[in-house]
Amino acid sequence: MFSTKISSAAKLAQAPIAFERAPDKVVERVRAERPSLVIFDLNSARLKPIEVIAALKADADVRATPTLGYASHVQADVIAAARRAGCDEVLARSAFSERLGEILTRPR
Image (cartoon, rainbow, N blue to C red):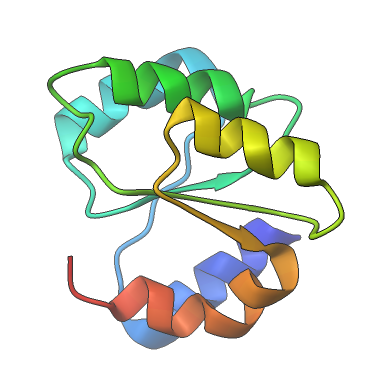
């Protein structure tokens, strides 16, 4: 559901967007494409976001790439784990939804 919301907001903002659903491909893709921001659904069981964020931040070639994660505001453990892994910004899902247009268009 959120990928549709992100895609729609990106289209409105005329911001390029791409999705990677294979956790073992994220670092490689960030290296190749040099995105201005990598967004993580911190509840994605398939993507393993905490592990992937830690891998991004451990890689000298891409660690400076900004990361943003979102999760339910009641999941303090997930939010804390994302911050420990190095996620640059963590938002409650509701705040992420409200600010999505601004997030996709802010300068980096």
